[in-house]
Image (cartoon, rainbow, N blue to C red; front, side, top):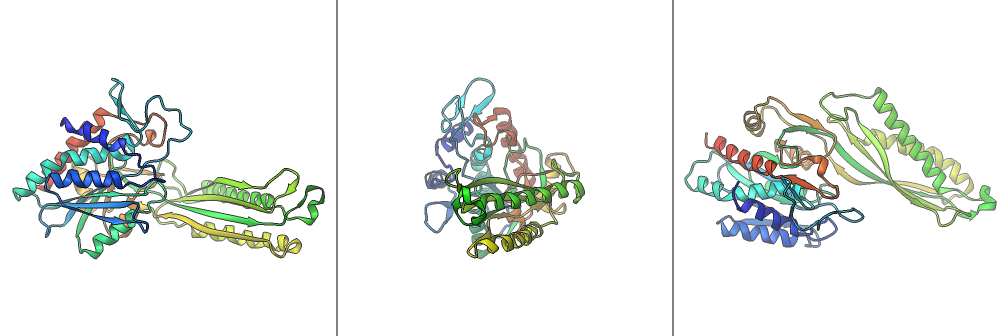
Length: 388
């Protein structure tokens, strides 16, 4: 392992890039690092210019790219019991490196950055059949919000991408398919009343509960009778309600309730049919509600949408991964990555990276040093493949 790999990971972890914060310090640091190796990069910003994606190219600009992609943001540490400082890479001597984002997914980014001198040397000698691209995105953890602008920028600039490796933690085993994810907010507006006069009010929490029960029934029906794919660890489409709030006091009929539900669907399906069912049931409930309070309402709005993903077995990136991992296929998973958006844009993908998804988002998140070594070595073998 190159001596600078752990140093690079330490530098990346020290930036608190929780999604509610800016990622610009990390992006500017990565930009300076690449510039010091003779690699130019460009940024695409969010509307407030408080966050940015980074794209860099190594090699002949006329060659199609193999893109190495990772997100820069991490999830919060609030309320988690850490035994070490979360934004300081800690080596406890047990073969693991601890820190927020060490597995998800700054470990992969560190491996890519550590390989840049090797990539630059091969490109300067004209040995690569493809260019190598580096993509760092913002706000993946809150709905893959940033990478779309990076993808649009690539398309607008005429950059040809032959394949993309999304380096989420997979323990260096290829993931060739994953579910899509969508979040929806449902606002229920009833009518407040004193709790001794409940018939004169419209209880927003109770009507929300009926909607939530309907969503649960849809989920149960899908698990029992819906389409199943054995490739996936959870082999059917799922729905669940994750957040709810409402009411002001126990002796007041609540006028307002809001909840959020999600759908994770298999490739080939879409969440619209479930949302339509919820909306139809909401329309039935509204007839009851408005009989008491004409102002009552139920509003369902989309919040997050990230498409499902299936890898093209004939794509260059799939062939490279198949040879280097000595496998003809790979796994399907229930979690979602930016591969869905790359794939939707016509860019073939495989998800492969160091560390375990089981460590992602947890207190004392860690990555095994052996996984960093395996990823660094694998990227070298990928560069070897690009010379052939």
